[in-house]
Length: 70
Ligand code: SF4
Ligand code: SF4
Image 1 (cartoon, rainbow, N blue to C red):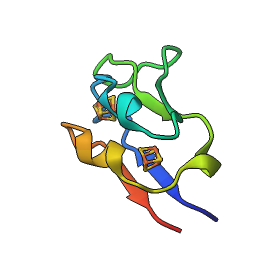
Image 2: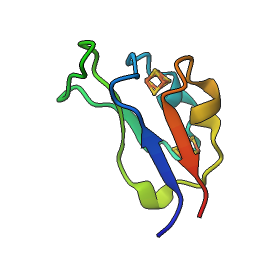
Image 3: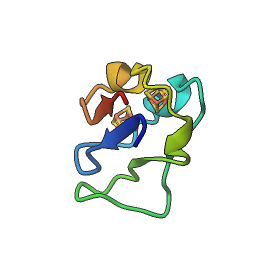
Image 4: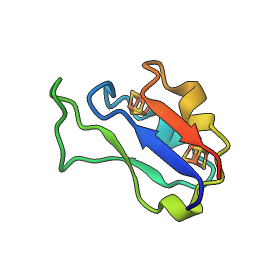
């Protein structure tokens, strides 16, 4: 269990805004993946470090991120 960040990969446009606001720097643009729209989606490195601040979800212009607090 723990805080969880759920990224709807196929909604993400790879704008990287979420990666810039995360205070824990656990979000990154995954250059190794392509979503259905042809974008590199955002992904999480270490979910255990997430403090569920929801900054990422708030800034995402496409509402691709959902945060679940433990
Ligand atoms: S909820 Fe906060 S700590 Fe967790 S991934 Fe989003 S911005 Fe980072
Ligand atoms: S802010 Fe939203 S659309 Fe932009 S990279 Fe992050 S999840 Fe994807």
